[in-house]
View 1: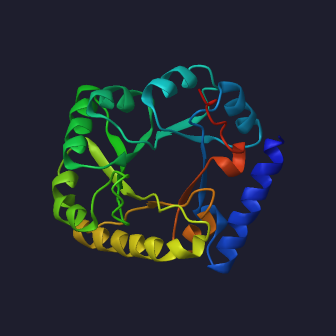
View 2 (view 1 turned 60 degrees about the vertical axis):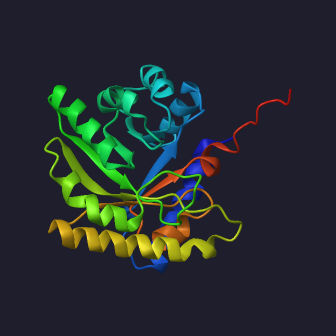
Length: 231
């Protein structure tokens, strides 16, 4: 596998999606989803030009981060349990997966104890899938001001994971509604939210066309993850 070729291919697709939607390619950040990848693979991706990596499990990340170049940036993208909040605040530059007011309160408490301010994205379960975490859109609107009042949290935007489909065009309405929700949240807060994190390997071009500023790419970069052997 040539990660440099994969990165180049992904970047060309990002550029093409930006061209179709009349956006500057510099407005879209490529994140490598490195969960389940070895430090060696992360270093290879870094050599290919990737600097931002997303992890889903705090314990995996804390081991991996120490074995990778210090110049790399790390963000939490998976569901975060409250008992892992302290480590998440310590190891990550941003937590993309704030999915409840109670978790935001715990992150705020841990950030206060660490004398730092934590940038976060608020995760929205836009499709209402029972298997996914995240605020309902109406719930987010109702609780947004309470989250914004937490002194050690900075809301930088929203994040969503669209339902999987072999036809990415089918999730365009999800991304459109997310863009509308971001605008609604900006009106409530009276301030711009710079990030809309949406789009993965199967649908990132559609997400970019609908306003995504950060795409999370795993399979298209590293290839399919190996499945555990059947017992």
